[in-house]
Length: 125
Image (cartoon, rainbow, N blue to C red; front, side):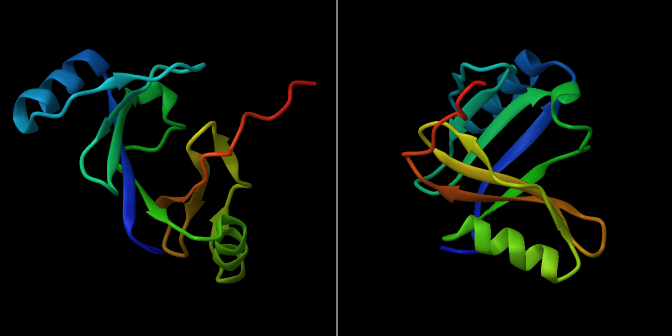
């Protein structure tokens, strides 16, 4: 559903310590994701996931980072921009979907996410 929180990220000074904290606090289990950065993924419910990553790999965004679901990421990016916010061009999460990092008119950082299992990494040049 559009506007529903579908994912959040937790930056950590020590990712192993952070995954242990949330594992022991909530019983979450984490899967290490392959890729160019360290990322540990957990599925909290049918619609909500979370990731823990080293703080220096989070693009400099302090604190928790929330992604809102959208049915049409390109339209949502255009609308965020038209409303005076900023939005990066969409980027793939291969096999999962598309995301865009945004900033609202008040300077709050958030993300958009559209599920799409056919999303693939861009072709290398």
